[in-house]
Image 1 (cartoon, one colour):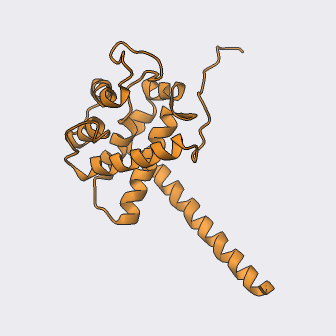
Image 2: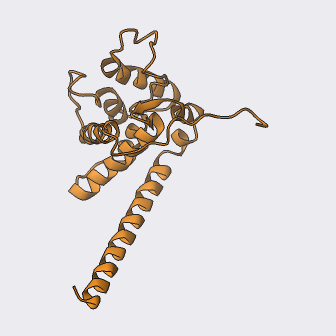
Image 3: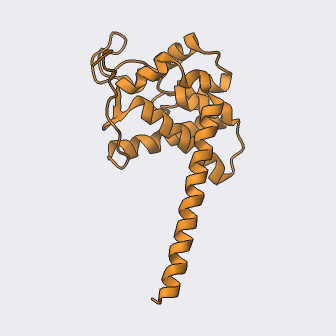
Length: 186
């Protein structure tokens, strides 16, 4: 390959990476603008303390699902209510416990079946949820939750959740592990 072609190829790749970086920043901003109350919540920040899949925390997982949900909508030109999509994606795993340990509401490790209801209960206690957001949270584990989603936003989050869960479990997405707050002064 000639030097000129190599240079042109490098420029095209650089431009592609720049566009992707800008697009990711826009999605990040969209998420932050759609859910400042959720992102600043103490309970939401607690999701950094529990592992979801592999070494990915619940917090990282829900961010991944929100990002991929928005990307699916944008790339496939699916019209939807993005604010509700993002808020539902951020709250879909709002169960607030370490599902790897026995829990009073989940003593038999049937987390996949029970956590959507627990997440909905926790989210409803803390936030004013729309019907779409409730549908996203309650039915994101379909087909384990027998009743399928009833809105396109819930279907999108369900698909993004399955995709992210697979990528995290197979270690294609690396997490930062559990974030632990250190006591003051140490």
